[in-house]
Length: 274
Image 1 (cartoon, rainbow, N blue to C red):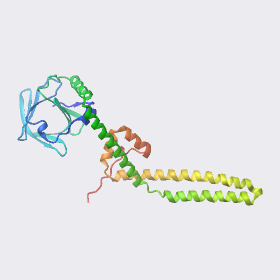
Image 2 (image 1 turned 90 degrees about the vertical axis):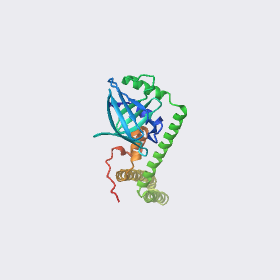
Image 3 (image 1 turned 90 degrees about the horizontal axis):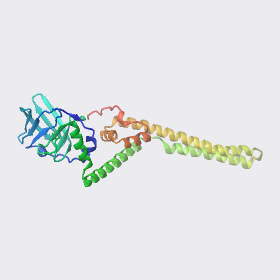
Image 4 (image 1 turned 120 degrees about the horizontal axis):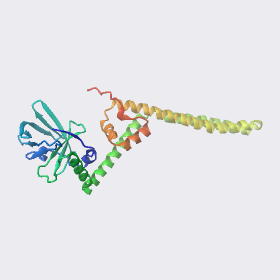
């Protein structure tokens, strides 16, 4: 059985209905797409037997569908295959092989349009992508937006947990230093007329020092939060966020711009079982 790289699947699979059992493909023959001219058919029986025929040569095996994981498992002697449904319609079912980007394509033998070459297959996938039901497309887009906002909110929640810098204390220090210099400048200006320039300088200095301290403490707070977030992502199995950021480049860019590191490149420290 030959597998293929199909770039359009990343765009198509989000519009595909989910399989909740093997009834989507069992008790009916399927032709396995092969652009070398081989005639390969597969038939899934209700008794968990599967029949594979290649150019007239038959082999039997066993199959089962794990609805919880959404995985079709097949065994032919020493050969084990795990297939994840990625896209289906009335004419084809496309499976990802062992969670890779290699795809196996089942074609309904009753499908009138010939799929004999890779060009034919890609043309059909492109047609399917351009003719998605608008209602399904709108529902998927809404779900994606909700998912995007949910992930973003979760990241911001993690950032708040990681922000352990004593910001209020240091803000009070900044205010106290600035006010002390300002009062000193005012008193010099009022009571020491001959040194009024010193008083003015101290008043100006109060503003400058306040701004410098504020900038310094703000930078320290940011750097501390970043360090804590890196540690947090190492110690916590946030697979959902990491996997989502791998696929959503826009949100990943937002993360890096705001938090100054790429969590998808962090080597995980496995959490020990309790």
